[in-house]
Amino acid sequence: MSQFVFKMPDLGEGTVEAEIVAWHTKPGDAVDEDQVIVEVMTDKAAVEVPAPVSGRVVSITGEPGDKVAVGSPLIVFELAAAAVESSAPAATVPSPVQAPSQAPAPAGASAAAATAPRTGRVMTSPANRRRAREAGIDLASIAGSGPGGRILRGDLVAAGGELRAAAGHVSAETSVVRSLVAGPGVSRTVGGTASGEVTEIKVIGLRRLIAERMSEAKRTIPHFAYVEEVDISELESLRAHLNGTLPKGAPTLSYLPFVVLALTRALESFPQCNVRYDAAREVLVRHRAVHVGVATQTPDGLKVPVVRNAQALSLWELGAEIRRVAERARSNKSTRDELVGSTITVTSLGKLGGIASTPVINAPEVAIIGLNKAVERPVVHQGAIAVRRIMNLSSSFDHRFVDGYDAAAMIQLLKDLLEHPAMIFIPKVNSP
Image 1 (tube, rainbow, N blue to C red):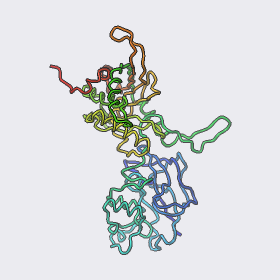
Image 2: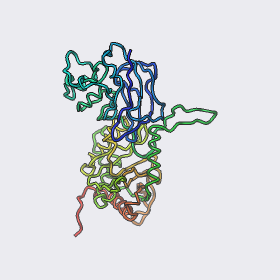
Image 3: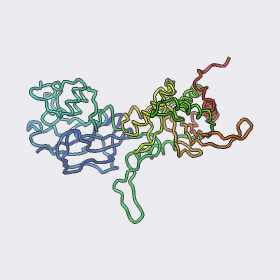
Image 4: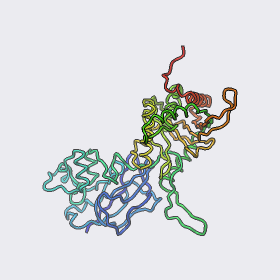
């Protein structure tokens, strides 16, 4: 038997450590290559890490909530004698890989092994053969860094292959990413102790990350809150008419695509609200394109998938794209790129919308727009009491960079567009 020491992989973007969120194996278990063994979290993402080899687990390092430095031993496997060549004992210590969610390639492979021509059948898993085939990689050209020259997933990454994930596993392009933004999430009870009516729950993983982000946002961003009521009676009439033209069973339009479309129009006049703040460089990065973050409630907590280039989409395209990114977020299929890079966020509590709210800014953005519940109320309309559909907009702005006057003026323009929805679809005409 030979032991294989698997170290905490380098998950990219300057990560120096990762927090253990949950182990999916324990000492004594037999695992197969590519089987998910542990879920870890960095400040960027939560990643499910697969086993680099098949074997029996000898020991693991760390409990949920513990942080393990990149390059430190994470788990030790015992390999079958048939899987290890007696001439390659140094190949039992892995080195980190440079891509998220990929198993690291063991260090110790000699220069001769890297250059020697390969003869006979290449040793690797069926999953890696498929990945290599899909990426157009010749396995015979790769020097395997695993036991006995076995080609591991990290070797394929190093070869520059664009790997695709097998069902239920994770690739460099489709890391399992949890929400990275402020908002409620799932608190995980791990090692909780109950005594009478008191339960202690360790704050780890996504809940810890959310707590840190929320605290940082409230500590560093002076929030300017602004609430305005909007008469959306005409908008509701238009929405009902458009939905009535759809085939039976087709997805209908919610208020959200109308609000997003109107927001892209309003931002033409208030570009200082379509901004990301680079705190490290003390630079405001103003975007011409509008990448709208759509706060989405999921079983794992609130995530914010991004609708990119919203200003270039039609109403129907916005509706379809919002549904698409929201569904991918709910089903844990979002890629990292689909969860980062928004320039302004829209959040809605739906039927729980309440009268008003004070949404927390999704840093490094400088503005967030919240939709409250739409209700019918008696109001004065054109000099008479009438029942109208009213919805409040609750917004927050970073007062360091958006003056209160500009924030209020932008919301008033958004209100005007929503109350007269035909204006949303009329090209902007400059005043003479």
